[in-house]
Image 1: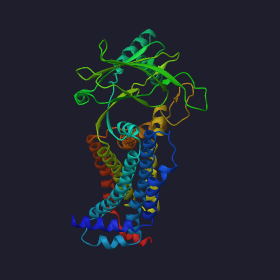
Image 2 (image 1 turned 90 degrees about the vertical axis):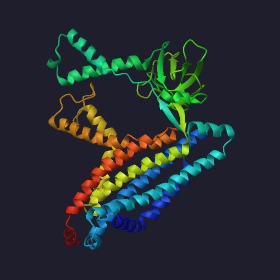
Image 3 (image 1 turned 135 degrees about the vertical axis):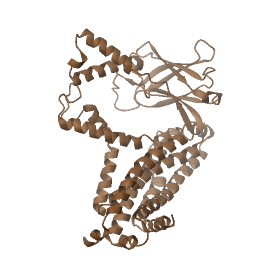
Image 4 (image 1 turned 90 degrees about the horizontal axis):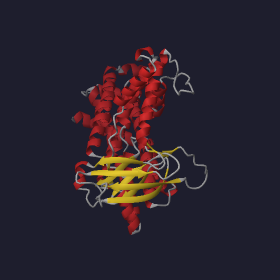
Length: 469
């Protein structure tokens, strides 16, 4: 490991001398200091803290991400092109030690820059919080500067019911499942599934929707602790106003143990199509930690709560400082993967081509929405506007769906973690999530790119690169 450490130190010193580093430092300083002065918020301490965390951490991640790719491609490809690597390769140092030392050197620089910029964001938040009035500071510490766990209702498995209803529909139509075209059968299945979901999601005028949420073993610790409901619903009624605040809808809530004194009734006006949260009284769950929530719809329009994210209960689970460190840890895992991608590209390509190749992989990773849409449309051919899908997919449509499905599964291994969103909403980032991020992003994906890069770099003829100069 002495050889690896020597390469690591040399890479750190070499990367520090890049002209990109002073520019990157100035941009990070501007993101932390200048950005909070120009961003607009809703005028509340909570809104400012959420926007500050979202914008600053997003800018820091983007700047460090692009810089990591640039340095990873440049530190290896440039040394090969300028014949510096040939001097190292003739020494008793294995190629894999050179590659690993390069990666560790880049990650040392990333760790230093991320720690400095992240620490500046943290202390800026704490400084601003201490200058707030007592009531606003407590509200901020209970909603944003905190680590809150989440409890949701179990999503019902609708597939057995969908299959049962589908068979009954086919019997009524006097049609066998094998006799139907796959496209028509899939459309019928999706239609049945959406109808069943509507029974769970839709709250019609004058009716109510009940959620039964178990707080699990945490409920004993949550006695006398403040709880929050985070809700989001949509309506079929269009908001006609183009200026001013969005239209709100009256919602009636009954929370607690039914038919007992431990029942709280709330009347709150909420806007549609956006996540909103409000505090509920403590100790409303029963002895088993089960919280019963009823929402009554007194409006003249339907309210639709999605099964996945329509309602959840947020409860305090830890402090903000350690939660912030875990969030930075996940961002550091992202940078580790980008460093492995850049070095792998530079292992067999020249600097400009390696940079272009690495950025192409990054763009594909950021295009998960487009990939998902292609999979839903069942191809890349022209979509039928009546059905929203391709009526007669061609062979390249089937190939694209298979190929993009595989890419999306890989992309989801990385995008399944969202520390910036969790920190800005006061969500708890667990050690388990950080461990999964290390396993999936660094060890699995980063390890795969590392094995590929080391293998290509080991087989690369450096004399050929020298002869092409």
